[in-house]
Image (cartoon, rainbow, N blue to C red; front, side):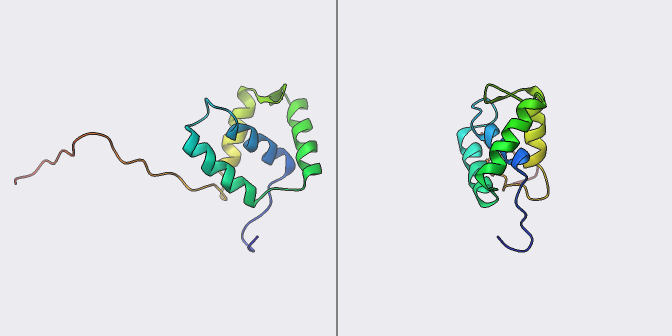
Length: 101
């Protein structure tokens, strides 16, 4: 890791990783970018286990899946200063210009 990158806490990582597994969260291509980003800042496995237990205790996960509050918390993790790159999706349809040709 570079000096600027910081490892996520086990709790933050567990939430964000669970969001990459949630099919309704985003298209597969976006979730793949998130997962790639998270691999660079993965804490030790024991910290992730403790983080997942903490998420269950806080009601952010249930049976290994994110609850509504867990989704919000995971999006906050991914929206932080160390957020993953945003995929550019070009607009669909004809380009309309409002000028003389």
